[in-house]
Image (cartoon, rainbow, N blue to C red; front, side, top):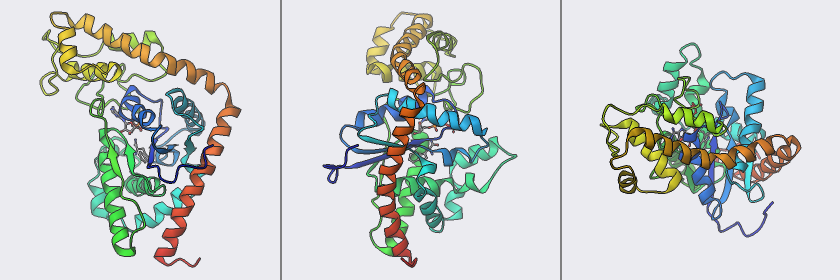
Length: 336
Ligand code: ATP
Ligand code: LTN
């Protein structure tokens, strides 16, 4: 693991909840950028298992999903020798700083969080305190590493903003303690929509058949989902999210995996029907995901290797995190 020459480099932290299988949305909105940025930054990428338990998880499934997620991170192109890939619950500083920050986070601002409102509507039987204070834990995740950038999809922007507010509030009381992070959101692919309900975000926990495609889906499953994707009764392939959400979503996906611009895509499919368009998008996704799926399967079979990675990751992350935590404890007046 790299230990030198990283002082002057800027820092990235991001994470994904192991609350289900990773989707094409998690890849295009977040992981693809992690990989792109990882050569030039000092990187910390975590499996946010402490966040995942804000919604009930089956223990054996959670354990499996965390391991699968590490394999997927590496298969997507993250180099475990230069990035710290770690499991959030294995770095206790996250829970510790989260408590301190929750004392600098206001009830009113937590009440405005869209994710809390959505998830408490979806899980009416379990509106727990963790679901509500989630942004304080996410702020701890980010601020522990003095991160400069937080690459996420559009839905997480509000959580990065509240993290900035908490950090500024704390710095205002105690003097400069935390770096103020910036969200890094892709221009294309920041909000991939469900293939069945293109006005709703594609989400791991969506149970609508065919709405979501997963990184580990087989080529057949992917092609079926794209061929059945909802479009409209028109025939024109044109980027217009308000009037043509289904077609525009497929264009976003195609643009994100091929780097073609929207005008280029419109020209490519001028006069061609939706059938040909959906098949071409499906094929492009199949080819993007094929090496990821194959590599994940290979890595997932080697649990010892994965354990080596997350142990080394927790050690590297713990070292950086504890430095910040000690500074915070001193600032608030805890006896050293
Ligand atoms: P859950 O359903 O458990 O809330 P999710 O699928 O909505 O999960 P995650 O996979 O936890 O979201 O999100 C991981 C990262 O991927 C975050 O940075 C998030 O912003 C991004 N992301 C998730 N879904 C999408 C999407 N549909 N489009 C673009 N980015 C997304
Ligand atoms: N809240 C994010 C996951 C997450 C995260 C983070 C992202 C937890 N901690 C820190 C960026 C930085 C989600 O639900 N996708």
